[in-house]
Image 1 (tube, rainbow, N blue to C red):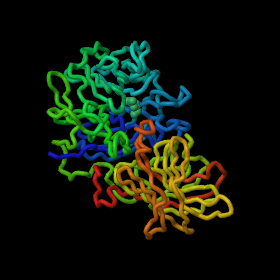
Image 2: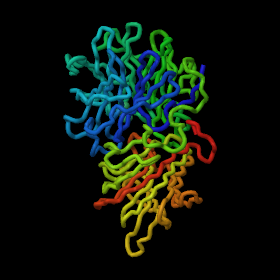
Image 3: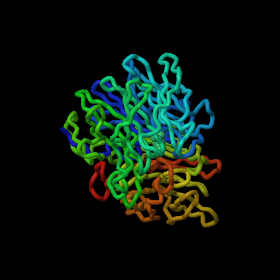
Image 4: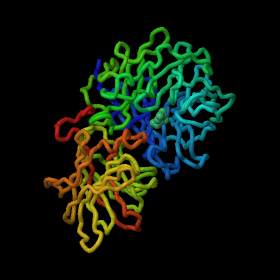
Length: 528
Ligand code: 6LW
């Protein structure tokens, strides 16, 4: 018996989907405009999740260019059947209908390579795929109801997929619009067959405060589905906002090798008021069956802070993904760029990167020179040591990123004007408006920039390596989370370099980026 502390994946890992192959579990989550997309995690005990790759990891596989923040890759489902791993997902906001919408990718090895997309003739979001015992394959998803009876009513549809041609065939069946009357956003459907009965697990209420998990069952895969009288079978919305975890939903079920059931689902941990800068995270919940229905967190009825996992090998608390502390080397799978591969502007160099500055800014939905990692801890220092000689108006440094419209930059720059002194400046782009937070002169040569998050206080520091840094600015983190800004994302922290639209040859030598959770508290645990 091992105790695991929730969340099992801290930081922005929303919409988890899980499957099991023998003793191995595989899990994927949404990544929106970030590249590579759709991280694949492996676990043998549901506790320790090691990232093994990404589903979307090469140029030309999908086109994310131009897709604004919180568009892009939504809610993948992962399944295994017939020796093949299958992922279905949606590319949202791609204007070209031949290169957007719902798609399918397959792989023989979940670490990759994954196939190019097979585009599916299905609208809406949150596709899932169900392999029935008789060999038939059923795709399902959600979309706005064609004939809505209430505002934001969605409908869950089910349609057969031809395994060979990978095309949808036969009639479509609309099977569900939510457990409760007037409920918004019945979504995230997943079908299962347990002891001969078909179960439809869904989220409803929207992916924020009112999020909930509901379940229905049927004798036939295409329905009719009858809702559980206990619906919603899991939610935290009745607990109010002053609680450790809110917004739980978007669950996927998996049975372990000894017949116990588990759910992975998303939830948010507010701190400093009703704000959740780490975004929607992945939690693990035990599930039992009573009277032919799943019971989530039996005896407790809410996402447990700690879960007893009988199948896990003993391991200390806090060793889950995300507790890694120190330099993030170039081959670390936590690195992401925006929309396209980082190789287009960055080359690994020792423990860090050589970054070729780009005219594209972080305010554009293009491909800025940006390389970052998720903020996975409330208290963390993210520190980069870099060398750059920026031309007037150019900037290179660290960014705390929510979106194009909302982010905070701490950067080395020069000028403008005759007093073209080299300095470190801090700017908060808030709702698309740039606000100067401060600046201070800095010598030629190497500079260390630090974002120091302590709860909702983000202190921006700069100095020469090894010397005590000075504060350039301070930001209230509550201005950056999606409760304030909208969108679906938690925060990222990373290095970036832009010439603000001008042609440039400037190169930034990023010696390294360090991610130091719990810095200052001496703790490095997933919950810090
Ligand atoms: C996801 C959907 C949702 O596809 O958020 O509001 C989307 N609901 O289930 C992005 O995570």
